[in-house]
Image (cartoon, rainbow, N blue to C red; front, side, top):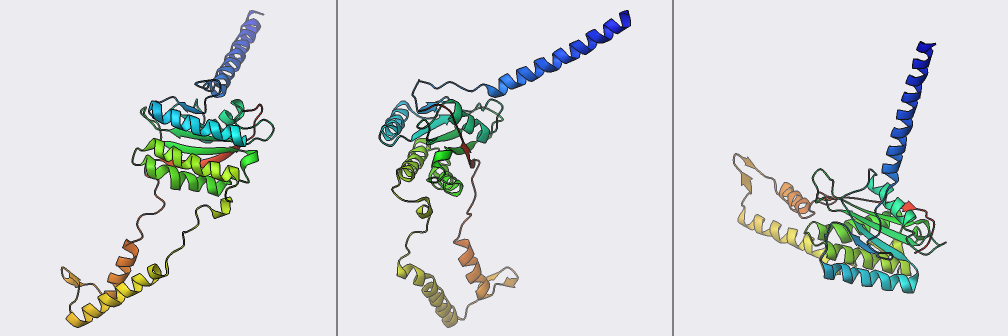
Length: 256
């Protein structure tokens, strides 16, 4: 009887430890930061922006929310509470009630500046389901890559967020469709002809001088030179530096 009692106690102890561990893990994963203010839209927990920069963005986003019923919230934090940035952004959108109630017209921009050690620098745009038509996946990613990251690489954080929110506001307001964003600008006719004229001039000069471009012990054919010139002008495209980016969607309860 005593042995049976010990076994029961052991199983009870194991069960209690497992349940307690699951509750602790769930509590850790479900906890999220509180807004810096009841209706604050620029929540900078890392002091990445100056006071005047935060105030300027806050005024910009508050005015847009009042006139368009679209809430754009910025959260800057190195602490994602054990979540991936996509899940964290979606949870913020849901639990903070970003956007107009019932329309799910909210957008969350999450920035992880990695001021703390062993934290990956990331930027993420999450949208409510009601904004997916205005800001689809590909467009949101382009906004991160085109508007935010170039400024962030120069440590111009306000400029990047200002540029991104401007585009998001224009898309949300219907100033232009997402299909038009990121399209190549019209190229002047002369710009298309210029590379061919340059090649022609180089070819004529080389023919007249009868010189050859060479490296130590080996000549470089002229067409190889042209290929190098052409490819060298393209630059390194698609590099994010040490920032990574992404986008996701969230449904939510509550309102802005």
